[in-house]
Length: 56
Image (spheres, rainbow, N blue to C red):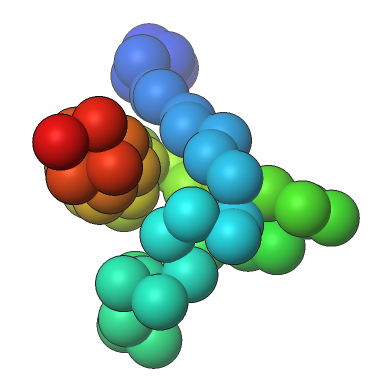
């Protein structure tokens, strides 16, 4: 049985929680949100866009 590669993302919950939709499978871990595979890529993109908007 072959193993597939997986990714995960951990981001600060306070910074992205207003943008996270209920359909995105994320898990709360204290002050953070954790997502796996495709949801991890979407969560990372939300967090990076939030950081860019704050820097302007």
